[in-house]
Amino acid sequence: MVRLTTFLKAKIVVLWEQKQPIKKIARDMGVTRKTVRRWIQRYQATGDVKCDRQGPRPVAYTDESERHRYWGWMSSMGPGELVEIGGRMNSERYLEVLKDVMLPSVRVAYPEGQIYLVHDNSSVHKSKIVKDWLNSQKDITEFEWPAKSPDLNPIENLWGQMVLNWDSSEIRSKKNLDNEVNKTWELLRNSDTCFNMVSSMKTRLQEVIDSEGYPLRY
Image (cartoon, rainbow, N blue to C red):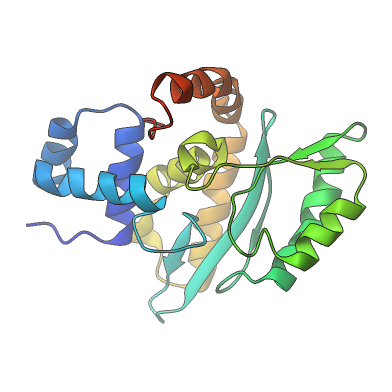
């Protein structure tokens, strides 16, 4: 029996989101259909394959058992800036990322016009210092987002594509991990992946209406 690491659990979810049959996923990964269904149900209930209130993000460990976490943004033009967070995100760090990474890098891609920001309802995103700063930025419009709705946020599919594309067998040090993450991000930059994800939003919203709010296969 295969011991499912976080990487393999995430891969199950990504394959399922790509509409592969549960039977095929189980066969290809060497696990039972019951196991596949269990991790899909966990993802539908919590938005992750771990009970992580921050939601799914690329998280990896080096051989020194250090935890490394990354933050990035995307638009229909493709992946934007990617930065390492280093441990758990807090309100102060997130505000720093918004000010020093998100806003200036978005303005490079979109010099004019309103910025429409989509992020989930984690306590970090909804903290007072973050809300106060966003309210002070007249050129940023924050979308209200339904709770536990990763299937509606295209960037969750982008993180899933990173999990599928990177070669975790090569990650044995912090340096190699950074190289692999950035290489995978750049590969996705040179594709239509983000455009296709954003273009699917109209269909996703209609499917939510049709399914009366139940999770989608995205």
